[in-house]
Length: 212
Image (cartoon, rainbow, N blue to C red; front, side, top):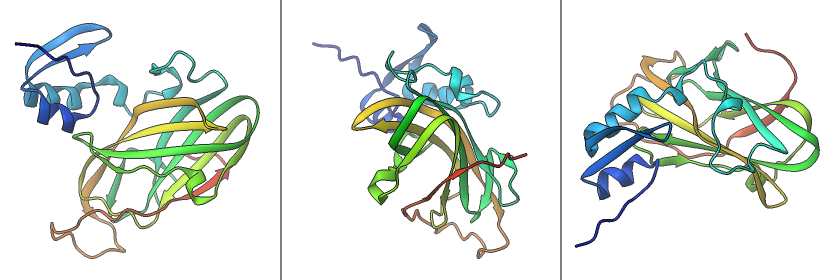
């Protein structure tokens, strides 16, 4: 027989394809065993998903990522303009992305992918697909809002991508975890358990004011 080694951060694929899983932490075997158990440990214990970790210091999959354009931080923003890592059910999902460009860059295309806790992508818009691009120089802030994306209560992850003239300058996978809570936002109907996911285009806006 043959053994196939499948390497991935996509929990859904791992759960489907692999009866056994190796959990690597900083290049060493952290745990080995049943895939469902290992996936639960990975989602629960990864220090890369800590709200207090700035993504500027997270490892990149490519050694060239982050040299010309680098993502520094990404946090959720509440309706009261506070930095948060959770939202009420039905609350508008808004995120503040902070980045840095070494030089003046025009027509930057930003990708913002949201996955559920099993690694299934729910939405992955790129600003250029909506005819929106950005000119950045030095440190910049970008607010990304999803006014019509309604996620069921649970845990979710964000992957960021920065593209310039078709070339990926930076990408950070699962750099932010956030939660949609069971508590209901005052502007929506009570949660019945029957809600699905509505995929819509976000709004993108370069911003200059500080948040709390």
